[in-house]
Image 1 (cartoon, rainbow, N blue to C red):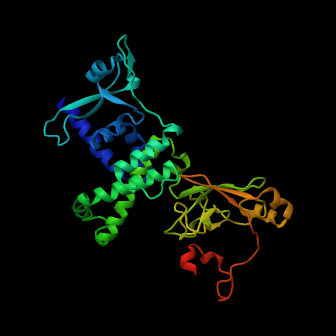
Image 2: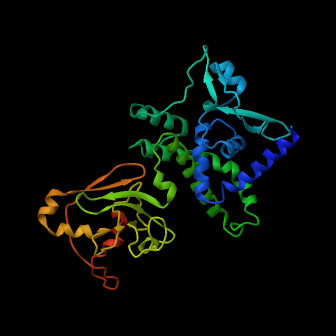
Image 3: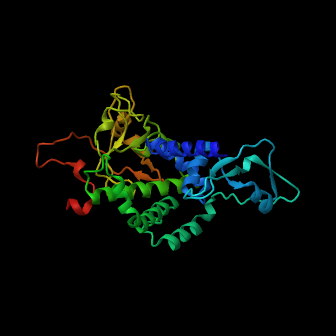
Length: 339
């Protein structure tokens, strides 16, 4: 057992580093952890390392006594530490529900799933648990609000440990308030990601590129693309595809100072006018009144909600950067700031 304990300890140490090595690994861990959210963090890491597809885990005695289920012959347990502080060099073994089978005494295992009729009750519970939520227009928005509240309430307890952990890292010279801001955003997004993954609201494309903010579509055109936003490198997608490889076609992207979630009063989306008819070339069809009459709605869905925008006016212009009296539409995002 001592030898196995050492092997699991090594696995745990490697996994601690692996899950934070890049966003994709962290997201994969969150997608696993959200299914076994009642486990300790160290247990979640070891479950992810050994059985990332596990949906419901218990010790063999609990499967037997609580649910009347027997563990399949030859099933391999998921080794975790017996206690959080690891004061005893002992392991406990969990088994996933897929490693068990029913008996004559079996009881239903309450693995819940989300249904649309539950949304109002779930939103109400989120608010009563995590405090007042500003935007409750959809379940996804309520989840983001609850995650934000949870982060704000709990992060102060961990800030001193966080500041200590930055020593010797790339954050060592960064001001503490900036470190706290970044940490808060990471925690908020991680909690929301887990909840949305568990509620089947999360999109596979977001796993591929965390810059994704939505999807735009115009019927009877080639405009049917993911939309991204890069705040730190505003024009990155001018010459890069969705997968971040170089391309003259680029990828439709939102201007850096626009907010697709609140949303801002104006959301500016850029896309190339390609001669082969791709990207935003299709918008040229709006020069014909007959096309506009049959295509008055443009769909732009965000990751958290579905939206349609009515086309009320169309004009062709160029970007006048040096003229003071030109229509600088690209500077208008919030009405109050533009007046």
